[in-house]
Amino acid sequence: MYSYKPEGVCSKQINFDIVDDKITNVSFVGGCNGNLQGISRLVEGMKVEDAVKKLQGISCNGKGTSCPDQFARAVNSIILHR
Image 1: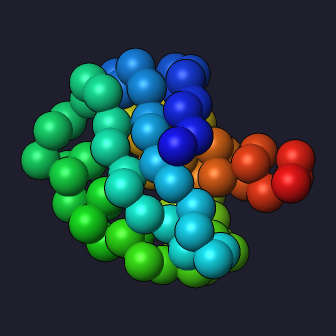
Image 2: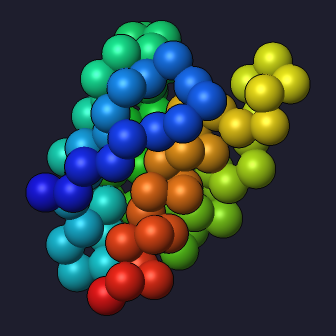
């Protein structure tokens, strides 16, 4: 299980697993519960590269980042360190 502390967003922590290059067990602590449950379900079983491509760069209210973008950054940081 990986944990990531997002910056500049409402969520306080993102937890997830990567198994066979696929994302599983995504959960967000804090943030917009319904939206983040939706994101978690949508990326479940998705290839890591596909999830990063779809979610990176999304901005929330002009913040320059968002919970989906922070998730993409979290996953990308794990990939870079494997």
